[in-house]
Length: 386
Image 1 (cartoon, rainbow, N blue to C red):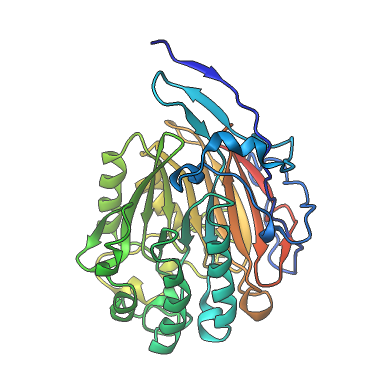
Image 2: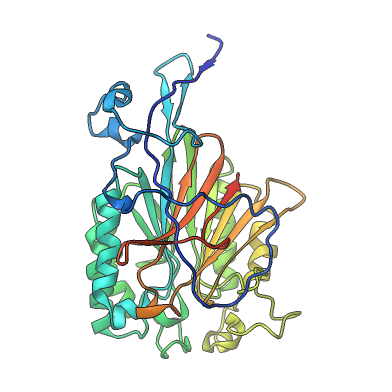
């Protein structure tokens, strides 16, 4: 049967998450930054319901969604029906939530970390949250007390919302100096055996260690691949990641690592940009066997030759910026830095919400479940095209 397409117009509320800015590094203008997301009108977006394709998984008839009597935003694609000749697929917006550098919450403000993950749970269905991605620096110091706080907050998501964790320099011994790649405490609080509930988890680089791992999930008939990379990944880790990407050529890939972009929206490059502070090559791991790779090296060794990589997410530098880069083969790659730790209380609970629309756009917004406020500057509210 020849596939036919038809559009079903649904009235669906979509929450735009925005915020006010504070003093920080001034980013450069990115390529193809897209238009800013319009300011949200609800006073408290986390109380608004919304329809999602996860409703069908919960036994809800998606055909009844239009009768909910909800007011939607006409500027947003509410969903598209695709008739493939078998069961009709309802393509709906879906969301990734990004947690940047939570180190100060783990050390001093655990209630803010709890507020973030509790909010994610409360919005999992309404926003169709498919994954939570932590960009590293989960803790400030590699000590039991801070890992206890971090694990309490993150394990609230267990069996509810899938999540992937990248390791930052503060997640290793050395008080942020990353004097070694010892992950004993991280492995104890986030053991591989604890992933038996997570069906999207696929594999790891090292036995018993989630610091370099990959995950595959499907949404709207498309496969998505998440690859997590350690801080300043070793050469062998990049070789492993390259194999994972090439083994999943049809999946849209997201690379999640800690140190990649600098505050001005350029990639870390220790060979040509000696003015960039905090390059992974300046940390203790540089002296260890296996090598260290910064943003430009990750770009050249891993991303340029894998056209399925669509997005790179990172933290580490105390700023927000984003960069869209082209390459000889494949679509553009959107690279996004998010780190609020210089804000009050170690970041005031701001997180990133990436809403993927059926029309191929991604609305990026920034919201604090703790303060119930948005950031509205150009580096915290923008739209990308996949």
